[in-house]
Image 1 (cartoon, rainbow, N blue to C red):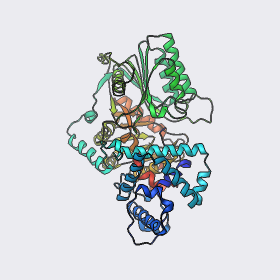
Image 2: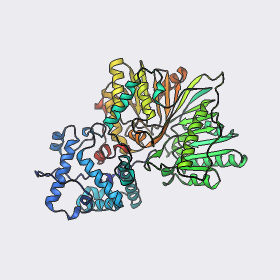
Image 3: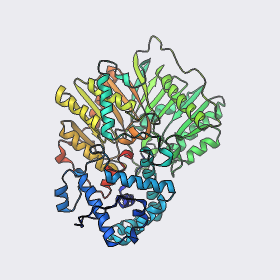
Image 4: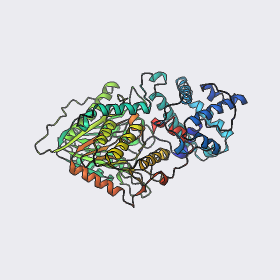
Length: 574
């Protein structure tokens, strides 16, 4: 689950894209877009409106693969748009973003969006009808999420007065830097060489497929905790599973007042409806909670998921504390998502605790929180019976601007592949470095690449259907064996290479995980475990669970009025 608009609530996104039409033949150059373009649109003269439409026409033709065909049909098919990873930010987009940044600095972005909505309601019957189809609260939610996406985009790019220090690289530049790092590091055989982490030995690892397996193990280890329970998560939902998880923690604290229980959640998420009540229950019970925020990048999020008990047992992966993950709620109307966690027994868990302590202490120090730092020694020396090698990889979004540790490790693993790569991920949105490495693996080394992701039927966030299916088409056309999910949402995130190397992650293969969210991955170097995960992938993609996509011709792209802003202005937020 991520902070996205659904298709029924994206009309304000379409409004912001200023898709006024193609019916202008004026041969004039329009002035740059400014805040006045938004706030004074009603007062513009007929000629000024024509000029504005001309600017939009020039912009639209510049981001299309086949502009002439599109203009003839007066339609914009999603597969015909060059997304931000394929074409750098245009002059028109820079002008638009600069104007929006000025509105943000002036504190008038929200009121301006209200004006745009009202203007479009009077000028476009379809827009008016779509707005009338949603309730006032839904429209307010959509507007709030839109503003969040706009503000995040502006600050990520360093365009507002309070974000000038942020470094932003276009996707082409970022991809080139990643490839340069992989090339320069090619002589180093260690897959972890760019991960800022190292291998440690641990006693055992176990794949936890879906909520029943993961939550049974979670409850078992937390009920047996004697010293500490450290929880890092995106959200604790206000539902049956969230309530039961909080009940367990509060109950354990009452049983053993000396048991240290610490919880970190994403502060932005915890402030939204459906994600805050159970967090408040924890706080009210006296359990230490940090609502994670970034001081340097306020748009950033905390998306890691991990539980560490007594410095000896760890569970990490994709599952949050909610009904769609746990499958606990008997109400069959509630979806049961396909997800994956990993259980680590032994010294490897201490590496998870090391990461938890790092994040906890940084928040305490930088935000001057009234909480004690974690000072206890975290390292545990591996014993003779610990043979499985693992590593905990952290992606620090506050510091990373030239390729995340997780993505660089994935790219290096792909570069080493000799026989097979399996990629199972909820939201796959290709960008150049990932696509080029997979294509080389297929074309030059004849590696078998299997990919499994969501379909437009299964995805929980309809607005990402188009970018995911565009990537599915590209995967199929470069020769990968591609599957998309039937039924409920796929939320799993894993990579397996050559039955040797595995990653179980919180990291989605999309721009948001690379640019915006703090993420983590557990890397495992163990043949038996990798073979088991290969088998899980095969079971996930049987005919009753997945559709096989053999080429781009098999992909039916859904129509979305928000395709241009989604694939262009807000691509980094996907």
